[in-house]
Length: 305
Image (tube, rainbow, N blue to C red; front, side, top):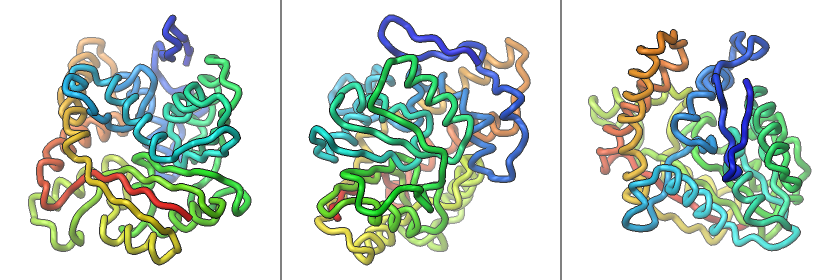
């Protein structure tokens, strides 16, 4: 895969096919999904933002990339960064948020961790191409962070903690608490269920299971269980904000872009792999699942150690 940077310092992938060295199935559904479907995210974002956007202003809905970058800024604002801070992105994907943050805060050091080797390789290439010196990528598992305790000033998970086991997401939350310094800040932004899985209606449960299966999610976090778990671990000054309507304009783009991708692949006679199809099915389904406001919501949780 060849990487190019344009005049606006964004990174674009041409001929997005995963090289043979990464094509073999790993036995880990998350690694397999992001290795095979990862290049598809260029259709979603030229900067490889692998999350929904945040519509802060009235006309943001007209520009998906602007909404995606505003979400990155929304994350950083919640961390209240200062020069010399060490920041950890737990489940960094292709490091779009830390690349954005490193440019905005050149005196802050950013680290991202991902279990997917392909993401490590490509993230490092993009960081080098953009001449970013204050960002680095770790190959590892956020359930067992290879980071010493009490060494991080701020940590966040942007649509990544959902890949952890359990609806209370206890393992990554405990690890975040462990590595944070006293007074360190933590932010989690993600989609959540608002009631136990067993209490979802049959229709919602079917869509929910489809999204989880196709996006390699063991489950969504349950907002009440996650908040309770964070308090039990020791996090304090928790603030919970539902921002479903702020991400809705971005989510609307999802099914239409998926349809465009499907049509384009058909006319180019590109054979879609299993994870490409999984991503398309999830992108269509998540839009309709998000309409069930009594069962599903999108939240930002902030806290201090």
